[in-house]
Image 1: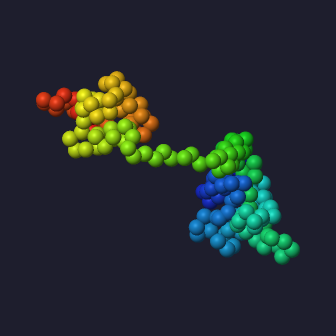
Image 2: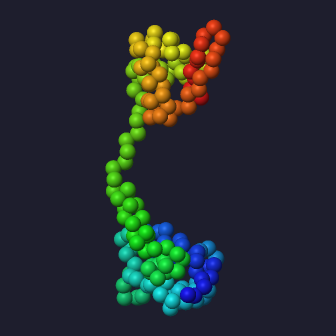
Image 3: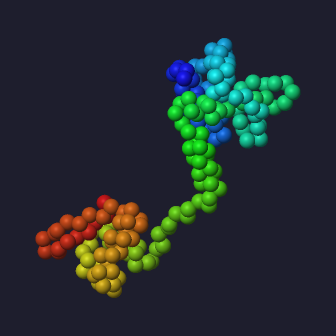
Length: 177
């Protein structure tokens, strides 16, 4: 097995992370004759392959051929294996990315005003916070419902950082923050 240079490893690793395993752009500072020599050696080893560039997808050009759109460089399965990546893994990751790009965006939850949940958030967001008793009086809920809303909805679902401290004369006080 041929030992890879640092430049070859960088080119192959970057290409493995891009859609369609496109090896371009090359690392900064690698241009001209040095780039041509590095790429030629990698093509000889079978790690890179020149393919027709698809300009509609915005694939970068390696060189212009004069009779078509030009060529781009693609990391081959042998190139992936040379850096220790199984081609099947790369294809699976690419399929997952493609599926994620096509999936509808998750709708973020917006807080409605005037709800009991909004009322609790406002009470806990105040500097003095609120006790379970104060929240039950304001919402008409039972204490176990309030505790469930704080633990399940506010902490877990909405991700709010709610702390509790024991205050003399008031009991356990909950505060956002």
